[in-house]
Image (cartoon, rainbow over all chains, first blue to last red; front, top):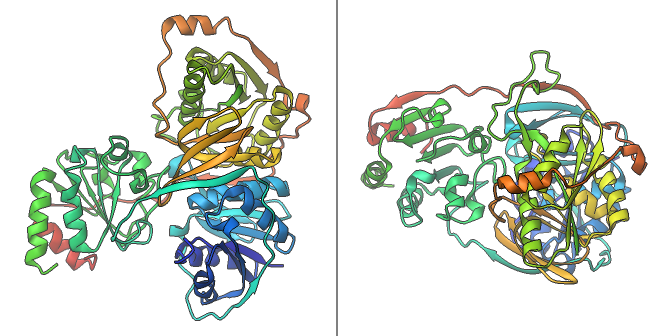
Length: 313
Length: 248
């Protein structure tokens, strides 16, 4: 029949997690349609229409969807679910929030955070914080799936999908948006950045995270953190890399003062190159790091800052 | 207001998980089991609400083998009032769990259900949302902060870009994230008291729910191993290596 991908966006910019989810969708059922739900999100729809392999963009442009509140999204997606045999979303906080509601209402199991499409009904997904990989086969019928975007290559561009407005659903009135406090940053988005510089408890304070910022800015990198650093209040929650935070797979992951708890490794071990600086040479992070430097970060970071400056970065 | 807190018995957070040689699953024999850490946060939040006088009764529910009764006992020792153990063996998928919980909600009529955002064994992150959908309720997932009133709740949520607040009508479902609170350790007197609290034993059939898995697990395997690399001696050498590798 067809598959439907829920676009991830902020009403202005389409996240590249969408094009990655399209890749997974195309391996399950074609044609692929993308649902862009938001408010004044025409630019996002135009961007989605350029993803290769997408046949149609469905746009629900209404204040109801400005923040993709799960209860209103449920009504919207269910109104078109009959046309699809697979419904997918990237495993972002939106996808995780919304899709289980769809699965429950369709009375089908959801398959969470797939890493690989083995065949149209068989998928690999991580369990136990990525310490084991489960291969599961879905029963006949509709499939509801969230996709770990970092595990898929983005579908290319050059597409020219048609854009179709769809009727907006009703508001069940059970939940509504009441405000947000988003982290403001000029740096690249954590899950999409080519380089991520992450700090751990070893930094010791929010103030000391400035050392990370300097190096990150020289490299044009995003900043991440371990759970310990977030729990200690050094940085906001959305910096957290790990099984329960964000999963990243940049070209370079630079771990500074991070010991490498299993939970953290689950969020970054698919990075192309991992480099680590830690003063404890027994730190587990060195078991996964391609390049390890045993050093005191309070010396190493300023030195790296100067060295990068010398090299014109 | 009554609060239901579903709690799951899982492999303890600190145990290194081993995949069985025949790839049928992970080895659970002689492994320490504990309450799912996110569910502990859920119990703690419910107990704090009770201490503030906003909640009158906390019912802890677990769906699992007889030993899941111990997980309920832990919740009772933390401050829950009574328990319901829905006994069954083997893995129960989130949708079946949500259906059992819906049946219990229909009987118990709570104002709020608080549970962990995900269990650290199957990492599904589905049950709370599924329960809310089956009930037609609002939800506040990945909760960072809760303000509970008589008829509504303001829930601050951890989202990809930072924090978002939603306002849900009660009754509703809330799922907890890491920083909602720090769960207490049960004191010895409270552990003793918990032994006298009641745990009602039920089966999925009592609620008319078929728990047969819908997904077929074909195998469980080890993730690809990532080998360690080389140690470098200086920051300059590290940058040289990264430049050589084309990483910077």
